[in-house]
Length: 127
Image (cartoon, rainbow, N blue to C red; front, top):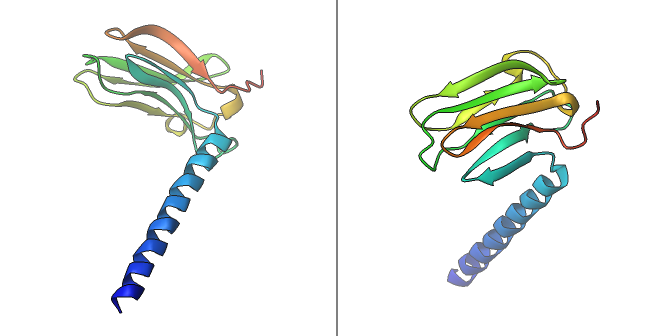
């Protein structure tokens, strides 16, 4: 009986590792985030697919960034924004302000303690 339990745990562990690896591969395959780290991670983050009109402008916490601003843009026009004054994640979701296509979407981000205002966009911009 204990041999079967040991085998079951081994198989379960192997399945878990495979699932995690597959998840990483799928994330890389979708790969339409446009973000980087300048003291804190920030940028444009795609939703579940490239055609679901769901994307995010985010500025993560860190580096003494209490004030952060993250805005959703579409065709270069700001559509809505979120502001954080006391630290934490700044997260703006495109669908809060409408239905915008990812290929024309962008994330205008600002955290004065870490970086100046700039825009990240969906990499294969469709103009």
